[in-house]
Length: 127
Image 1 (cartoon, helix red, strand yellow):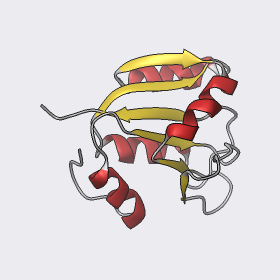
Image 2 (tube, one colour):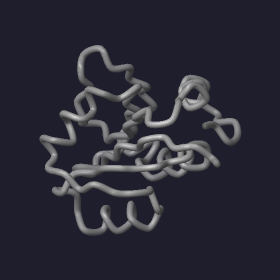
Image 3 (cartoon, one colour):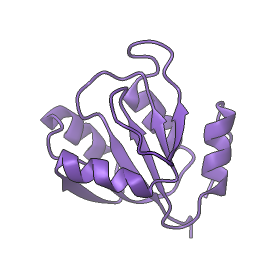
Image 4 (cartoon, helix red, strand yellow):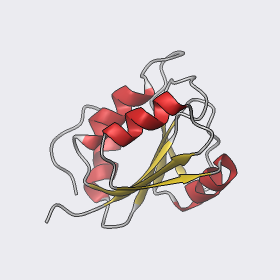
């Protein structure tokens, strides 16, 4: 359920079309995108845009019911994700995280080069 307008039209349209329980993945530059899954590549250059820049913009738009990230992520990354209150959070092995991306409506690729800077977001409803 979309809240306001995003600057990137493809990402804005995707969020506007998402329904309850749909999965959106935001990833670093190295996260593989499974065949058949839409990729919205925002990367301009190394580090631009950053993972948290994109995540925070998406969180301003999307109601998140549940999230997941890799257990291999650094403690700092995990803490920053928990701080953002991403609903019920599942911490899973990176191999399981990559497997769940197959069910995503889209993977948003950032310019981030921090290992395991990836998050899966399941959309919720605003009521």
